Image 1 (cartoon, rainbow, N blue to C red):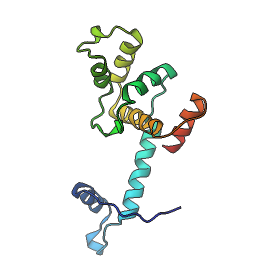
Image 2 (cartoon, rainbow, N blue to C red; image 1 turned 60 degrees about the vertical axis):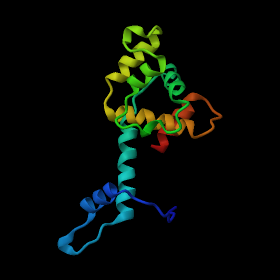
Image 3 (cartoon, one colour; image 1 turned 180 degrees about the vertical axis):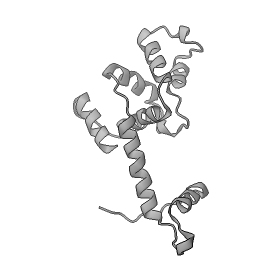
Length: 146
């Protein structure tokens, strides 16, 4: 189902759409809706393919850290390991007393930017809904929205 919406695009977004869809030789104008929809679909694909498999305990740690942040995925570049350290007031990994936290800091530190971004969007989607089902069903429901 399509919905007509009024949106305001930044100059950088407009330039991106123009650079990727307009064909001046053919007097073709940018295809705004197609470009926005295609970009969102490509982004969803990247998130879906990049979401790391984390244990329920690891998700719980991350959800607790970001629970107070209404839009955790807006920090670019993502810095989950640093966010975890900041939330614990730790400057060095040796300062992290909980071994599960320390292991997750190390694990997320080694993740790519797109993997971290996928985690943050997963968290954002989790926090944006009320869930009344088992964890496995929640994970599958969110992944299906990616």
